[in-house]
Image (cartoon, rainbow, N blue to C red):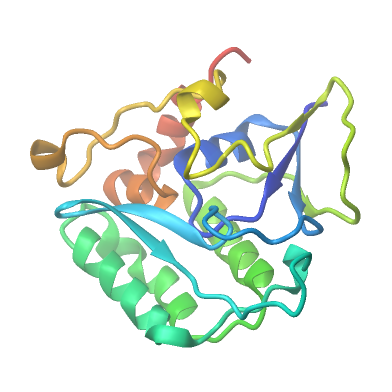
Length: 213
């Protein structure tokens, strides 16, 4: 049985969902120290002018070593409205945004206290829309040693790292993108880019992106 450890992620990139599909067991880390500028609270989408990063503001913790599970979402800057507007304006001309938008809209209307809960519920929604059923649970402690059947990707799927170097088992399989003629194909964007552009075929794209297994 192959097991993977991942960080929590907000509208995670395609690579992340390829891992949810490829592994028998998935543990989502809750006990790591919270670090800014990771996929824990940010995603990258395709806007008309190119890649656009969306970040969820968080309440500054009392200590530098605050575990992720205790990180609270801030209401600062009207971010829910801004994120929903960005998603709508970027994807309203895609083939499937109209089909899925009512599934996503509640996440930008309801206030969640903890980032971990928000990310998890959003991830489970996306898994159900793509039709994957990962065996996924939260960690109960922070592990530092792993067996040969366990892979640690908690910090390898990262906006500042090149997935081509970090992850030879993932290939960014090209698919239709609404701004492709203007921008070219943008690899490994948020899973919503794949979902809104490809709909039910998203699963096939994920399957084709998994190598060497």
